[in-house]
Image (tube, rainbow, N blue to C red; front, side, top):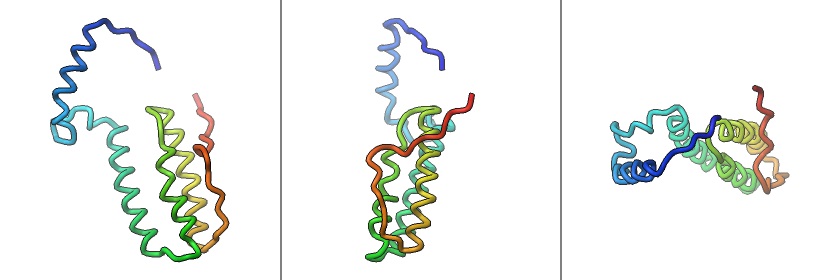
Length: 122
């Protein structure tokens, strides 16, 4: 990514954007059409679906694993390629945890920090 420097005029442009925030989420939200924003909306829908699925199969044997799965989105941080790497790491961890959830495995080690992202290939 290339860093760019802007003059003081950019503050006025941000002021205009701030006043147009009522357009967010509408068909006129031009920034809402980016691949990253579409992915973020899909992640929300996937999360809601995942929680519904977990709740239907929740029992005392798998509740800790379910809590771990429910907390995974906390680690999808950053912008651009950083977010993509974190998302890939979270998906790997989610796959492991879903297997444990299905088997009723109570042995879960809570992750204290983000799952290790895959190395970026350039």
